[in-house]
Each structure stands twice: as structure tokens, then as C-alpha cells.
Image 1 (cartoon, one colour):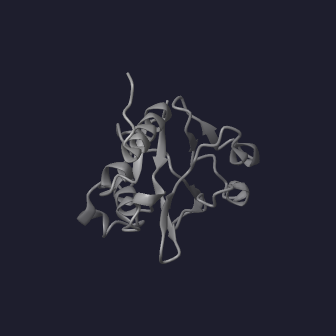
Image 2 (image 1 turned 120 degrees about the vertical axis):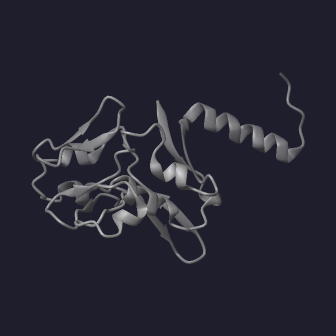
Length: 164
């Protein structure tokens, strides 16, 4: 299964991922048209930073997801991809999931008493935030492939020849 992976050292804090996410979840799915939409589109990825460093944060789809257990109505469920998604018609806006999320990335909808969280863009092959990231700080790939690439980079930096 593919995961949304972050390379924090590459994040510039440009917020391109937030913008792409909002547009991908807008009615028009067009940047200019989405600016005038009501309700205003909301992003599901949040770039957090302290002025020196930045980090894009989105739902980690925890294996033992506390939000799933806390949801009183069953609005939160795991889909076939393993992604925790919300059925907004079942959400009553009790905010229990917001309170228990260890990353603080589940937020309130601006226009109705519902939650907004990353759904990994189910209608796209690659989530919008990933395709928008100019530095490739966000990646959508198999974890094994990512770790193998990191090991290869370490070896390249150490100038140690690899054996096949």
C-alpha cells in the first residue's frame, strides 16, 4: 500500500500543498474559479512551522486510529485503500475526533458542523498535495521503496561503493 511520506528537510513552507489541496476539494477544481466559490474550499494538509522550519502535516491514517474509536456515529471509517475517511452525512459535529487526533490535523468545516480531514484525493492517482510540491518534500509511494532510496542516498554521500 502506498503511503504519504514527508521529507521534512526539503519543505520550504511555500504552502503549495495547501493551495493544491483546497483546489482539488473545490467544486470547480479550478484555481481561479475556486476563489469565488461558496462555500470556500478548505485544505486538508496543514503546513506548520516556526519561521525557521516548516512541515506539511496531514492525516497519518494511524493503524490504531483514535479518531475511529472516538467517532460516536460511525462517520469515520477505513476505506478499501486503508485511508480513514469521513461520511459527512453521518458526522454530527461532536468534534470527538478532533480532540483525540494526536497530530491535530482534523479540522472543522467553515460552512457546516462537520469535520474536514485528508482523504488522499480518492479520485486522483497521486494526491494533489504531492503533485504540487516543488521540492518533492511530499511523496506518495511504497514505504519499502522510500527507505531503499534513503539508504542509497546515504551510501552515495559516504562514497561507499554498493555491491549488487
